[in-house]
Length: 86
Figure 1 (cartoon, rainbow, N blue to C red):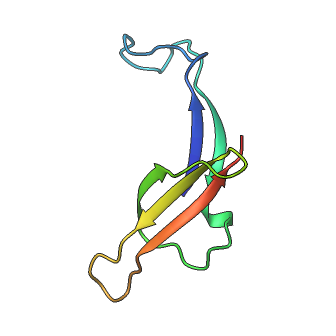
Figure 2 (cartoon, rainbow, N blue to C red; figure 1 turned 180 degrees about the vertical axis):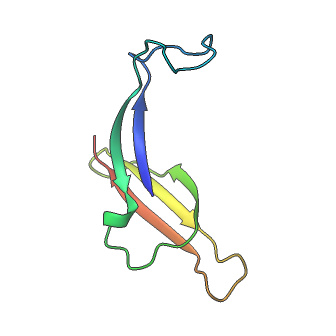
Figure 3 (cartoon, helix red, strand yellow; figure 1 turned 90 degrees about the vertical axis):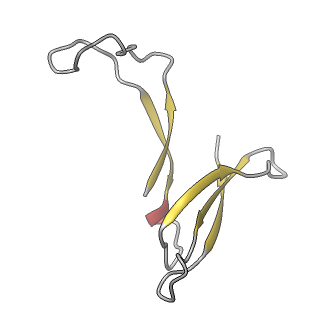
């Protein structure tokens, strides 16, 4: 799973377009914030919740991801916390 920060400020508002094929538009700008596969966490299971956590001592935001075990013995409940770099 990858999480991106998206900047809409320079993107074209496409609400009034019937479709994008053949249209001229500027896409959103995006920046990769987190690639969960590259975190080194041995087992990532069924991530289904995400929120900003408290600001860290250095002023950066924290990002919390959560999964639950779905009441099953083969899945795990996880809370993963990451620092969001500016």
